[in-house]
Length: 412
Image (cartoon, rainbow, N blue to C red; front, side, top):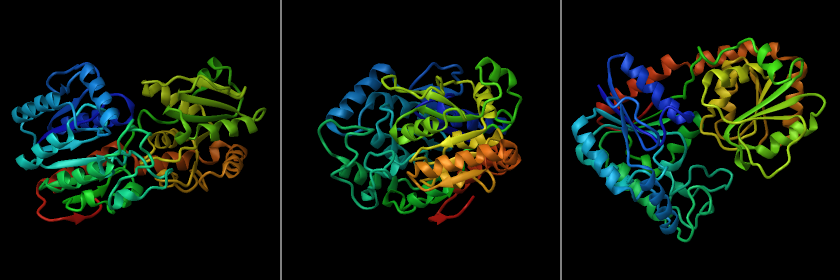
């Protein structure tokens, strides 16, 4: 089988690692795979294709903000991609994140429909089935179920400076995705699966199914972290951990810092990821910039006594799965996909926005000790987020999409 994956990044960040690991798994089974992406260098020309360049991306981003439409530029780069696809002749095309100002969405989707190429849209966020938004729950907006417009998230990512064309963009997506004869949809959690089933954009999808994101459970596993604790001067201390690519309000930065402040003298907080510089942090906060090393990240997860997931919007939450796989219990809010990742005796789920309840559960986990949870966390991760089984589910979904004749909704 010839498989082409398109994504905003490759090898790095959660979706880039997903695409890279999927391609490796497929190639190991004898399939021919190519990843197409706009950022970075091409390390293997036989398996990688670079879409456009930095200048084109910046121009796309500027025009998107001025016009209020994203995914309607980069026509030259997209045309070159389509010529590559003519040569490659993929049996299936997998659409991951396309909202990074590098692809002309109508041009790509019309090509897939005209050529009748089996197409799989992976819902890493909500952009495919909304007028522009990657997330909408904190805004309390449900307009995507019918017709967008008067967007409450207009100035948020993906921001528009002047115009609201969300109604047009949602209508375009209904038409463009609806015209693809063989369309499969992968939801990375039960939460977004249920949301996607309510979307008119996927009304004609042949197959729509939940497949959890996976993690490398061989890498993310419990390990001895005495040396790391000693290096960070944290030996013998209770450790709280939070991980995010970029810490912001939606990711729960204020919540986790408040908890750290309440636990000064009881525990230390380790925060991994890009943090705002123009603010003060509690004295018990230890900051680590985002790391691309999975081995280093696994050590940090293993070192923690409790992982705090204060994010309000997660379609999956890969950091949660990685923490569990390292035997670290999780305390999270009961929002979007968060609660379904925390199995029985793997931590606690608290009401959305209830900081006091989260603090109490964090204290409870610390009091019981990590050893009370570690085995259950690891087993839950192995059962639900193993790479081997979850990548096989993708291949089964590809086959169903390729041979689909009518709409069907089922678990793969």
